[in-house]
Amino acid sequence: MTAIGFLCPGHRGEDDYPRVEQLLAGAVRLDLVHTGTGEDAHAVDPLHGADFAGRLTAAMEGLRLTGAEAVVWTSPAGGFAHGWKDAHTEATELARQAGLPASSTSLGFVHAAQALGVRKVAVAHAYPPDTAALFRAFLTDGGLEVTGTGEPDALTAERAVDGGEAELLALARAADTPDAEAVLLPDTALRTAAHLSALEAALGKPVLTASQVSVWEGLRLADRRLHTDTLGTLFTREPVAQL
Image (tube, rainbow, N blue to C red; front, top):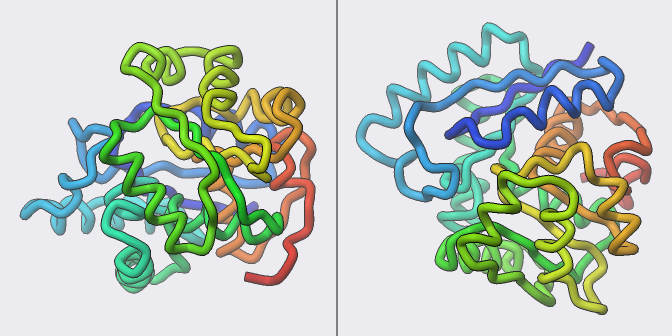
């Protein structure tokens, strides 16, 4: 069984990973290790504080004990928040420390879009405006064109985080544009795994979400391809090119 490790800054939305395990019929084990407590899932600075090195070392030790074959960092601070170049630098450093292939959810979104042959994307998010702007800039630097972004108010965002299929679909539709080839839901606090098929059917295009992309990226790093019709188009197509 392939084992993938995930470094997570917080606890919101993490129950998506056991759901993905179920949808993949036990073909993969997904292990979550937390980098610390009390961190905001939307925060971009705490992972670079003075005490982070010690917390990362402890998280790495927990990761090694899981027998993971690859590691994915799900935090914005470990991905898009510090830009395209730094995201690669941080992934390289993470791989060095872990002794494993490593990436981030943020890089996974770009890799997934490339694998699907997608260039124009809409971004549906529950992020604060400054965080949303950082993600848009990251995607642009990664060669994607952002055709639309939903800018939900605080109530709408909270409903999407705590809600179900209807709330997620409302968030996605608010961002979608006719020329978007896919809709991205990048917020790791969103619980999307159980709703991917319904979201794609309603929108008529691929949907890429944080938990789905994180697992796909981990499997890519581990050189394992799993096909299922329960986790959206990303898990049903062969990649356009080997990334």
